[in-house]
Image 1 (tube, helix red, strand yellow):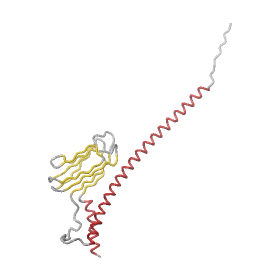
Image 2 (cartoon, rainbow, N blue to C red):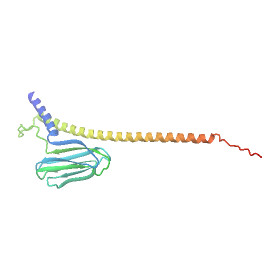
Image 3 (cartoon, one colour):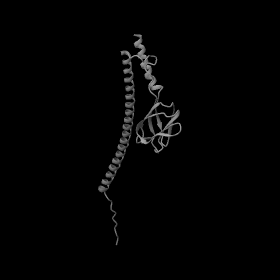
Image 4 (cartoon, rainbow, N blue to C red):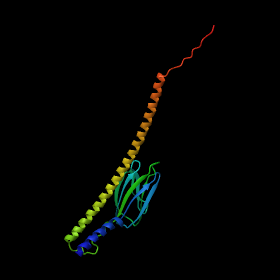
Length: 213
């Protein structure tokens, strides 16, 4: 009973560590003509993954650049809506990745990124791994992997929902302005037609002048 409870708590704690310690996940506003950089200290041999997506703004594109501690470019893409890049750190030091919206003159962007550093921590760090996993431990590992998949799916669905909402609100604004413009044009045309028709049927006064002899 207590062993099962301890295993379940280990699963939940490891799940929290995966999302809190090993990764940097952030959604931020990127103004027009702006550039935002982030820094991460990485140990040599560590496997890392950078994933990003533009949620709202303009054509949903952004420039992305990743550099190692010696300012060597590891990844560079221009005007990408979303992408994922995996690499293994070849040097110790601070790695820099930047998002740029400098090509845009009047539209700001909302950008999401997830920078994962290293592998997941062991689910059972204090257990002897010489022996095979018990049925309860195997079940905990399966639950752990399933929870990771659920979190990833939830993140992607939230991003898609936010992007769809942004598109819908933008379309609604355009339709509203178009409708107002049509209403104004219709009103102007109607008034012009009324004035024109009245001019056709209005009585013209003629002035008669008598010429005396």
